[in-house]
Length: 114
Image 1 (cartoon, rainbow, N blue to C red):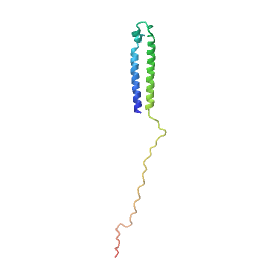
Image 2 (image 1 turned 135 degrees about the horizontal axis):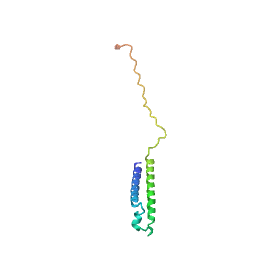
Image 3 (image 1 turned 45 degrees about the vertical axis):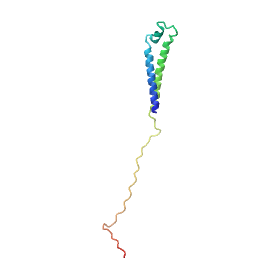
């Protein structure tokens, strides 16, 4: 269980770092990576598709992170018990009965045989 949780956390961290890189590479005004490679016109060498790729990768990485988090919650959740366990009190045995006390309090002397 711990190895699955660790693996999921590592995958979430990798996807998060990739998402940060992809978002930082974008420019909100349409420049970004496409203007770096293609200059002002985005019709050269198919650089126009760079914005589409960046947008799709942003949404995909966001969805991957959400799915991985949900999977980690389901996998590491506490299992439900099938039936409630009723604790049983330890059974105490009745104490042994005491031997009946003799009627006389004086010691009984036994005659010696000759």
